[in-house]
Structures are given as C-alpha cells and as structure tokens.
Image 1 (cartoon, rainbow, N blue to C red):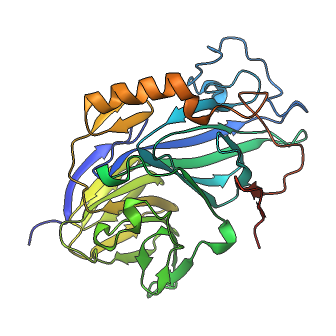
Image 2: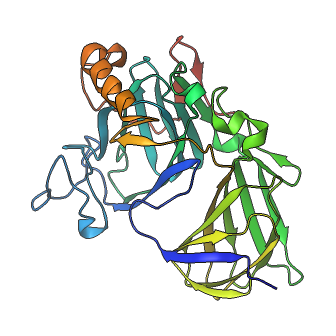
Length: 339
C-alpha cells in the first residue's frame, strides 16, 4: 500500500503552502518585559530598526521602531487569517476598524479591492515576559472576488470549536477548528467572499495538540481534489502515516485517506491547512496578489492614487491602551467583545 505521506520538507520562514493558500508566517517571539510604553525593556542596539527579523535574543521588532509589529501597509486580492495563540495583537485599518485580540482569538480580513492595516504587538506586562505566538495564513481569493468589498471578522477564542479525543491509553489530542468541519465541530462562518465560504472549496484550518505518546487518526477530506499540508511546528519526533518525522517539518499528505498520527515522547503540535485549489494564475508583488501583471500595475496605481481610502489614524502604528481587555470596533462603530 502506498504511503499517505507525499513529501516532508523542513520549515523555513515563511512556510511554503499550496493553492489556495499563498503562505503562512509563524511568529514565536520571546519578548521581554515591557518598558511601560508597550515596547521591550531592552536595548535595541544592533537591530536593523524598521526591518528587524533578526530573532536576536529570541525576538524581533519586525517593522516596528518602538513597539514590535507591522505598521500601516496595504493589501489587495487575498485574505489574512491571523491566529494569536499567546500575547496580543492590536489591529487598525483604513475602514476605521480597530481590535485587540489574542489568547486563541482569530481575525479574518478579506482585503478584496484594497485595505490598509497595521498589526502591532503591545508588550503590556512590565513585571514579566511578554511571549507572543501567532500564525498568519494568506488565503488567496478567486478572480471573481479579487475586488470584493473589504471585510473584517473576529472569531473569538471562546467561539472557536474544540474537540478533545482520547486514545486507548487515555492520552489526549485537542483539535481547534478555525475553518471547516471536524466531525461534529463546525467552524464559525468565514467572510462572505472568501474561497472558504464556497462548499466546493473544502477549506480547513485546524490546530492539533497531541500529548506525549498520544495517537490520533486524521480523517480524510470530504471532497476529491483537496490538497492537505500538515505543519509539524512543535515537538521532537512524530509518526505520521507510518513514517517517522523529525520536527519542524511541512508534511504533504494524500487528503483522500485517513492518516494515523502518533506523538513521540514530547507534546507535538501541528497546523493543518487544506483546500481545493482555486486553479487560477497568480501574480504577486509584495502585498498585492492578482491574476495578471497588468492587474498588479493597476493595484499599484490605485494605491498611489487613493491609498485605499486613506489612513484615519494619526500614528501609522496605533496601539490600544494599557488594559489587556480584548475587543473589536467595527467600521460601523459597533463594539464587539468576547462572550
């Protein structure tokens, strides 16, 4: 019988993905205690401020100069799905929306015809470390939705379906369902113009956490033609489809068959990305993802002309106060908080 494991590759930065995904960035930053101004209480000497991906001392400032993160920047033609497992992210955008989220919350933004947003990582704790761990997945949009209205959605940690399964020895696997369906666990609806909102797309985004020695069976995808990649990002060794895999690794699987997974002697964690391909040409220039180079040129011209609606904040890198309270204020002024 052929192996369900089609390939195993080491993980770089960002992670390589397959259509309908564009890439996945995994940030795991051991930020120190804060300085009372939401930046690190540490010297920034030796860092290329404004372009710091150094991971010096286990963390980076990215494009931030005082607070780590990504100040205002544009997107067109795709979606970002941001899963913040630890720490906080402060979002602001050209629609006028702002949010502070973390601790398992998910933000799903359809850039569509164009949005500018910032994503900053405020270090609120001044008496202890401020670890940050997040995934940002770029999910492509089909041509029919490239110029859709931008859309901002919050999926709060308390709303994300989770299931805990036990193997014959009582060892546990926890599955969090960000998109798609796992057994009787149906994820919250994705934005209306998302490829994930199409039944024929078979999109799933799950995280898996296996206790040491735990065994788990990954069910087959619902539809033929689905592509599936399992990102083994934490843990030493695991058995996947009968093959020993050393982490960290990207494991391409045959999505049409059930796959047995077993953790080694450490906790093992995985991110699963699956979907049927959009199957259209991809033209990309930085934060713009279209179907043709002509459309990329148009995106550049539109952004220069309109700034995608302009930036409604005085600061290109807004942060949202010293309280850890999670919230979202939508473009229409509606304020949303987790239940």
